[in-house]
Image 1 (cartoon, chains in turn cyan, red):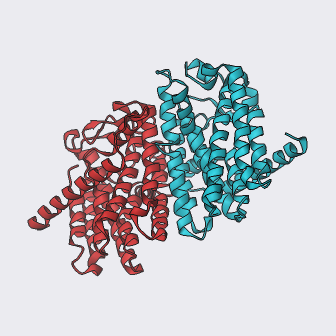
Image 2 (tube, chains in turn orange, yellow):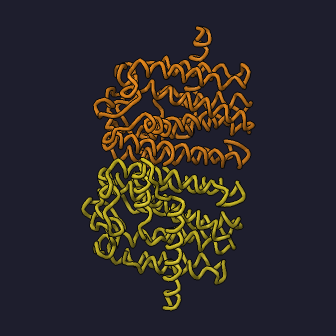
Image 3 (tube, chains in turn blue, green):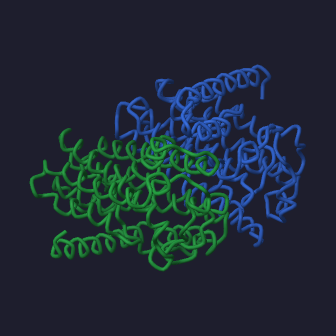
Length: 300
Length: 300
């Protein structure tokens, strides 16, 4: 990646991260009602300076179709709320029992388990409220499409189903095919929604939506392979979360199946494949192409 | 309540319960995919022969406006999925630690805690997918209104916020005002949505929607007061769930604040108030009026 593009990507991601943080903060204000603890935990779980990769994908895919950024940022916030809820629930003692998330105590360690469960439930529910609101798009058909697509990506045939498979992987040894399917469901579908959301908002033509979906599919897998590599190679200081959990749990991952070298080269191939799908946009998708390189090069 | 109306209500509730059971079962089929356990737990948590009071309210309020029952039953199923998810999460060890629900082991006892968390998440997510689908209503504006109203009723300012207050009530002693607010959020808002959903589907005029909302408000409070009474007076065999939990946890309830006699008479007053709001429908709402009596007379 050219260093000027790399710098531009970094600046653009920082901008989006700030914008999505502002938007979630505004949509989800603190309160002094008796149930303030719930909203504090919802804010704690979602306002924590993550990379905001998914919001960035929403914003940049929306850019391709000239979507009003004030609308797109609401979808970006909804995606991040769903992603955040999944981390809050995933970190629970009964699930991955995580101690650290983005360099801070996980939600149930900062508050308590019951509050963390409810905060996750609240974030998930609120994401749909945000999508269905008139401010997200003037056309209710588009809003319904967003609700449907997010629910499919996040539900039993998407992220939640992937997390179920991830739990089963602690007791059963999956082959490469099932591991790939697990990761596509657990991580890939939400990344795919993030890319497609721009196309939905911009009423993109089918070939353009297909290109975004293909890009997202390869990007999501590359992302997950690198996640597995970081779980082996990364440090807690770099990643801001507990590392080495997969190996400890004896889970089949891309790294345990392919080995580190093949896993890394697979991630690189997927990233360049992902970029190639965007050629249809003739140079207007350089930032999304840069994301593919970023995903493979990241250390956290 | 006249005994013929009582019999008719019982028969109608049984019909709705069967229809909603069929609908959820069809929308949420078993699978032989690797993640089958998730869908088994989602089915276990939602297909269990509950009273299906909320679906009944959806169907009968929809009836008032001549709504196609094939559409209304989908909304009824979505409401019941959200209600079921809330019970699955509420029963978790970190929350109420329930052993029995509707006479069977709670979801986390039948499966495990992690699966129960995911099953709840999956049911909540799927409810929004069902509402946003074209089959629920041909007008996307109506579908968006349903998504918005359900998300508000179920979220941080509704059910989830009420559950947060319920947890806080274990450590703090609430007065009657806060206890009423807690119950309105925890139970009342979902009951209100169930009644309003028929009005949304049927594009009811504002006075009719206001009447349904007023009915639902009083019905919801009466319902919760009777729940508190059953927690003191009921048996596990009758209610199908663990009883005596509120007193054990030292929680302020309508019964602990008002005493049993005043609590019961308050429930009766609320039930007749609820019925009175429906006079606007001139005899077409007899079944909904009968529900108010049923709610006060129930033993489970």
